[in-house]
Amino acid sequence: MYIPEPLGFGIDKRRSESVLAMKRFHIVLAAIALLLVALNSSAEAKEKVIVDSDMVILYDDGVAIMMLANHPDVELLGVTIVSGNTWVAEGTAYALRQLEVMNRPDIPVALGVRYPLRAGRYETMEVERTMFGYRSSYIGCFRRVEPASYLDVYRTEFGGKPTLKPVDKHAVNFLIDTIKANPGEVTVIPIGPCTNLAIAIRMAPEIIGLVKRVVYMGGAFDTPGNTTPAAEFNWWFDPEAAKMCVRTPFPDQLVVGLDVCEKYRFNKKIFARITAVNTPIAEMFRKKYGPEFRKDPSYTRLVWDTVAAAVVIDPTLITEEKTRWVDVNSDYGLDYGRSLAYSKRGPAGTQKARILFTIDEERFWNLMVDMLTK
Image 1 (tube, rainbow, N blue to C red):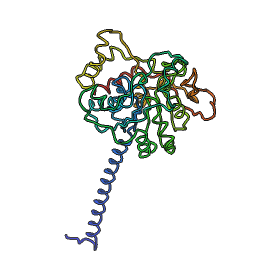
Image 2 (tube, rainbow, N blue to C red):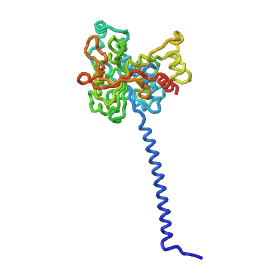
Image 3 (cartoon, rainbow, N blue to C red):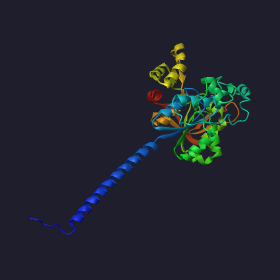
């Protein structure tokens, strides 16, 4: 027997089906939106880093940028160059060469400040050495005549012209502009003298609160200096700049000094792990360190800046740190460049900083080897 549908039943049924379809559509849209948010969050979770460096080939600055550039959770926004171990022209040539080897033309290099803040220090270096005494004969670029340009250095060291070139912006302006473009997200790693960063905060103090953190390779607190009995090289090279930076109220400061860096040494076992693969980086290691190990299998060397890079990549490597009020002696005397740390509130103007003392050594070497053999 045919029973007719109630009036409007077919319309209500079609309306229900339409509403159900619309709900399904909205659920799909919501799922897509959540996926996009997750993807964006993943991208935003990358640690944004600027390395401020007196660049050398491989150990230690070169390896530091290789580790940071190769890590999937790090976005290396740029490499700014300062004089220290090398003149700015030398450091620029070395940075460009290593980025070429890594095939990373996307990472900008910016030339920075050529001299420390104390006027005429380069010219009076021999007098200073006589007055203050030195633990080491090593004084970085002060021992050499400054090259005319990075192109001259590249041509002499590597032949021809680089395929990359520096950005048309001074390192100080690069720091300021990049920090402002990424407020609260940029970790600055001064693994050379602090001159570029010091001038940046003097020119644009508004960036101080916009920096996420500063991780220094510099200083020596409970251990002697490596350039003078009082001072570690990076902070000795420009004590005025180092003092200006550590006294700046950045949201977070971590000091990776000789107290931790002198505990860990690159050796033949690590060399063998890095050179077990056939990559351009491995070839660079074979060329530079192969002769050292053939001459002396027990050869070792410190790896300073790579410790700073490693704890930025993975802060859980830190096993011992102490928070202190930190300062740098800028009085031109026997303690020029000495790192100072106070367990109770320090002199007016000093800021709290974390000082690194120990890391998980096995995981540190594993991280380094992994990043260098990709």
